[in-house]
Length: 417
Ligand code: HEM
Image (cartoon, rainbow, N blue to C red; front, side, top):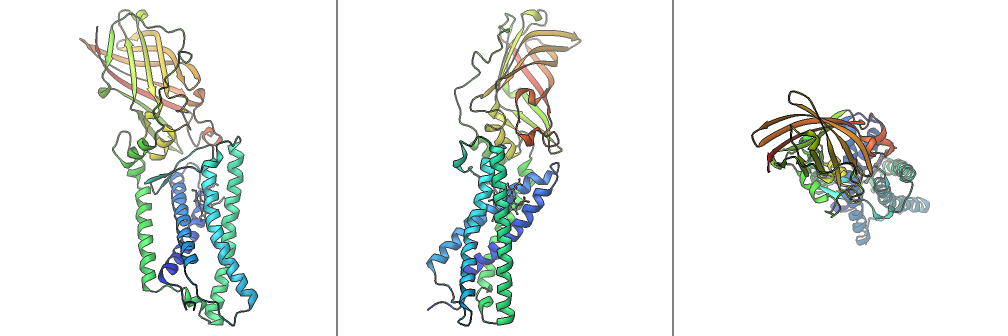
C-alpha cells in the first residue's frame, strides 16, 4: 500500500534541492555577467561549483531514497496522460540534476585555464579524467558551456511546469498531491540544518582571510596547496637550458642564508594587487666588489614553491597552468656581467630561463658588505608573456592578469672563502 505522503527525508531533500537549484541558476547568471575586474567573480565561481557538486551528491541521495521507497500514489481522479507526464517530469529532473552538474564539472575539467575546484575551500575536487587527449580545449570548453547552460534552462522550464501542476493540484483540485510533499517539522529541521552547514561553508570559503591571507601566512590555503602540489621530480634545468655564455667566476664564494633571504613577485589579477613569494630557491654566488669581471651568480628557483596565500592561484602555480612545473620544475637566472652604478648600487645583466624561454634580464640591486656578511636587495620588472606565462586567451587579456610582473629579492649571505 503506497504511503499517503512522502517521508521527512524525501521532503527535506526535495525542498533543499529545489531552493539550491533556484539559487544556483540565479547565481550562475549573475557571476557570469560580473565584470572580470570584480574581485567577487572568482569566488562566486568557486561557490557555484561547490553548491553545484552538493546538488549532484544530494541528487544521488534522493535517487537512492526513491529507488528504495514506495511513493504516494497519484490521485485516482487524475487522467492517465497527466500521471505519465508527472512521472516523466520527475525522472527528467533526476536526469537533469545529474547531467547539469556533470556538464559544469566537465566544463571546468576541459578548460585550458585549469582552475582547480575546491569544495567550500576545504576539499580539492579533481578534474574529470576524460579530457586528457582534447587538443582544442577552448572549443571544447565553449561546447560544454553551451550544454551546461541549455541543461540549466531545461531545468527552469520543467520547474515551471512542475510548479504550475503542483499549485493546480493544491488550490484547484485540492486532491492532496501538494500536501504529500509539504514539509512537516522534521523536514524543516533537516532543511535548516543543511542550509546552516552550507551557509557556514560559504562564509568560510568566501572569507578573505582564507583566500588572501598574504604571503607566508599560515592558513588552510597553504596546507591544501602543499597537498596538491605537483609531485617532486628530479628534473632540474638541463645543460641545454643553461645559457652557455656564463661560467663560474673565481671570486670569493658566498653562502646564502635562506631563512634571511626572500624572493617575491608582485602582479595584478582582476584589478587587485597580487603578491607572492617563492619559498624554495638556491643561489650560488661568486662575488668580489673589487673584481666584478670575476664575479658570477646562478639562482635556481623551484617554480612550484610560488605562493600568494590565495588557495586557487597557489594551486595553479603548483600545477602546470603557469610554469609547466612537471616539465620545467625550475627557473634559472645566471649572470657574470656586473656593473657598479655608484654608491651601493649595482646591476647584474644576465639571462633568465623560465620554461623553454630564455631572455636577457637586468637586476638592479643595492649591496651592503660588512666584514664577511653581505646583504643585497633588488628588483626587476618582467613581461610574463616573454616567458610564455599564462598564455590562454583569458589570461592574455591584461584586465584579467597584468602582463607586467615585478620581482623583488633580498639576499643575506656569508663569505665562505
Ligand atoms: C544543478 C547544478 C547546476 C546548475 C543549475 C547550474 C547552472 C548554471 C547557470 C545558469 C550558469 C550561467 C550560464 C550562463 O549565463 O552562461 C552556470 C554557469 C557555470 N557553471 Fe553551473 N550549474 C550547476 C552546477 C555546476 C557545477 C557542478 C559546476 C562545476 C563543478 C558548474 C560550473 C559552472 C561554470 C564554470 C559556469 C560559467 C560558465 C561560463 O564561463 O560562462 N556548474 N551554471
